[in-house]
Each structure stands twice: as C-alpha cells, then as structure tokens.
Image (tube, rainbow over all chains, first blue to last red; front, side, top):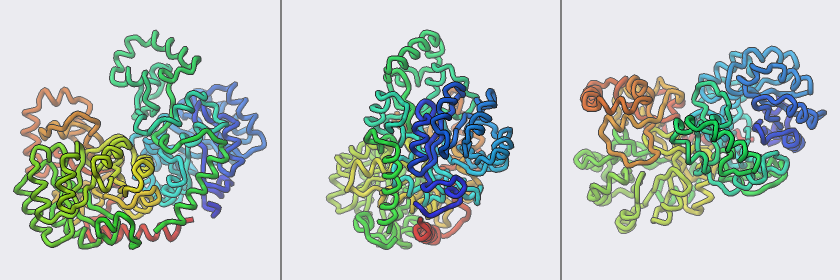
Length: 317
Length: 317
C-alpha cells in the first residue's frame, strides 16, 4: 500500500486508510493512534460539543489529523470549524448537509475538504461545491447513512467525479475490503466499525464487547435512537444503523408508540447510557462487525488491514 | 480469469461469471449466450410457468446451463425441478425458501445445488441443507433480496462456510466489481443487471432503454409491485428493488392506499405491461444500473467484464 496515489499525496499518509470520525468513539487518542500508524485519524466532532472537542484537539497537537463534522450541526456552531483549523487539522470531513459555506475557510487554511456522500448525485454536487476528496458511503456503514450499497456506489461515483479521489466507506473492516475498494476504483477506505473496539476508542467497554460478539445480520437501520436521544436530524433517508437490541426491537416497528411515551423513554434511555446498559443504549456499528474479533491497538488493526490487503493481491488470479 | 478455482471446476466454466436467473429477462437464449461465452447461464424459472420453461429448456439443449427457481414457488410445483433436471440442467439455483426437500433429487441427478442467501445465518443453514455453492446476495441486487450489503456480507459468508465456494451477487456489473468480489474471497460473481440490456435478454426494449438511462440513485425497494402483480410472497424482508417510476412514487409510501384500490390498479397495471408503459410497469433492475451503458451481445458483456477485471488486477498497487 505504499505506492503513492492522489489520495495519499494529498493527505500525506503512508496507507490509504482513514478513521471514520465516529461520535463518541473517535476521540483524539484514537485519531492520533491511526495517524501515527500511517493512516489518517479523524476526530469525531459529531453534533458539536466545544469543550470536548477542545480536549481532543490538544491530544492531536503536532500530529497529522483531521476532524469530521455533521454538516447541519456545524451550521449551528461554525466556530468549531475555526477551532479545528486553528489547532492544525489538515483535513475536514463534512457529512449530511450543505458544505458550500465551509469550503472557503477550509481552503484558506490550506486544509483538505473531504465530503462524505451517499449518492452519485450528491458526489457531483460536493465536487461542484469545492470538495477535494469524496467519501462514497454505502448504507452498510454504522451510524447515519444512505440507502445505496458500497460495491455499486463506489465505481459509479468514481465514474462521475474522476479525477477527484474517491474513498470507499461502509462495510469495510479488513484487508479484503480494502483490496476490494481499490479494485472498485477507490483511492482508499474510511473505516469506522474496524476501529470501534480499538484500545484507544472511547466507546464503552461493554459496547465494544457487543461489537465483538455481533454479526452484521444483527444490525438495523432505524430512527428510534435519534428520537430518544432528541437529535434533531433533518428529513432525509438517514436512518441510523446500529446493533439490534432490546430497545430497537421494542420500538423500530412502532415509532408512533415511542413518540407517545417519549419523555419517559428518554429518561430511561439517559439512565441506560450512564449504566452502560446496551440492551437499551445504542451500539452504533455497521454491517462489518462480522469481521471484528478482538480488542486491539489501533496500529495493529490498521497494519493487519494493510497486510491482509497485500496478501489478497498476492493471491489474485 | 482462467485460473481454475473450486467454483469453475464444479461448474465446468472458463470464467467465474453466472447469469442471474431473472424472471422475464433470463430466457433460454440469454442463458445459452452466457454459457457459450464461458460463463454459466441460468434460466429464470421464476414463479413457475411450465409451458414457458419448457420452451427455454429446449433452447439450451446440449448446452451447459442451469435453472434458477424461487424456492417457495417451486414447493408448489416440484415437477418443474424434474423437468429442468431431465432436460440436462447442470446446476439448480434456489432462492427464498427451504431448499432441503430439493437437495436429494438434485444430487441424484448429478447437478450442482446453488443456494442464494441474504444473511450469514442463512448461508450456514443452506450448507447444512446440502448446498454445494452459496450465492451471497447483497441488497443492491435488482428484484427480491435482503437488507445486507454485498461488500460486508461476502467476506462474512466466506468465513462462515469455507471451503464451500461463495459467489458474490448484488451491485456487480463490470470488471471492477468482479475483481472486488474476488478480493473479498468470493470464487465468482452472479450478475443480473449487467445482462438486463443484452440483445438476447427477453426484457422489453423500452425497459432496457430505462436501464441504460437510470442511475442506481433511482432504484427503490418496495412491496408495491408484488402487491399489484398479486404475487403472494411469504413474510420477510424481501423488498423488491426496481427502478423508481410513477407507480412506485405514487404508492411506495402509501401501501394501505394501494390496497384500498387494488382491483382497479391491478387492471391498470396489467394494461401497462401489455403496452410497455414502464412509468407504471416495473423495471426490475439493481443499483448497478449506473454501470450499464449499451445494448450489446451477452458474450461481449461477459468478455468485457473479464477483460476489465484483468486490467484492474494489472493496475493493483
């Protein structure tokens, strides 16, 4: 994976592997570990907690790193972008919303604007709005995402935006997925679930354990966890993918029922997060959980991903 | 693609590419053309029209070919399996239902039992029931299918059923997808949408034209076309993926409304099929439509798929 491509040159990385900026998982320690191992770590800026973000930025000081934001949430707190850029973020990844207002400031800071999209049409729009790298995210991904699958979306986006580098995301957690993504025409991959159970991940240890034990068969896309977390997502096909658990089984097919007892369920849900009860609280991971088998240092995860990709190519017909 | 693997040995094919047995698309002529070009053509046995199937079997006489059935429909007409086997089908592919009762007759006829599955758990069950090849079908596929995406499902199924050969299906329509599937550990691919617009396909020319013009962004999974076609699918997450059109836009979010005027809409729908009005009638194709650009002979489609796969490997890092 050491052959330079437009992506590795643009980001200055040895390996074309990016850490997905998972809210509540990808803190500064995980981002730093992925970057030090030769990939690019992206801090999960999420919905925008300024104090928390500040602490993560400090952990990455002097390191190559990036920050990912939920675009519609960044619109409400645009100063978080300045903080990330002032702290030395070399890349900003924006997902779910209009990126145009942020393209100028990111360019002025000599940072790279990475736009995550879920359709071919969005990819074209993001490039027109100034994105320098496109993440084509299939619905296999954990967390919010679209309805298209990675294996068909990536080559279509490559055809639509070439020569802009495209990164494949969604359902990729080992070297086989990295090799497949490169064959699809992607210049690299963005992995979330692969790093969920990393030692440096700030996910709850009990949630990590559930990821180790789950199958991709056991994930589900639903709006119920956004509802109970009072997250005000704009309309769109952005169902959140998470592991199936007692809460999703109870409510995913009865959203109006959940609405009718929402106050009560929100209180119960808040408590479950404090107590680490993940039969209620969401474990936000994707279909690639089948491929995650151990709690390990992020560097080991990344290097084993790269090694297995090399093996896959070495045994290609 | 000429290096033998367990799949090509088992099926006696030069290229690890199978034609999906698409109902109303994969007739005998298309199956024969794919087989003659070095892949394996599967006739789309669909819901079981005995007279029609007989004609297709005659077209494949003396050729290497297979037949695909919808398993729950075959339970209602098991004699169709005998007809396929008596006509020399070397492979039978079963999808959506309990394959166990058919494993014995297929084995006794020295044919290969291919089971298409949509989850890791189903893959294990199919092998236990006697399947010799597993098709791991991602939800990107046109027609009925599950909810998992190909890129995460395939390696998980490979890990679960190895050394049984696994074929990747869903979202694969060019050599990049074939190369990606092989990197994921698949022994080959099953392609439907790639061959939808083949000259030998029996799809309506106006439907083929829509496939050429559509993007994968324009496909949708819905139950409305099954409802209006009075197809009695068993319960399960088997949403039919098709191109979005006027009919799906009108009813996909108002299924109970459709039920309330079903008789009328069924009459109108029947008429639309006769008239080739594909703003009402379904064009059953998958997310890979982005990659289909021309009406061409099936042999050209297959060979270009194999050539582009070789190119992808040749340029691998």
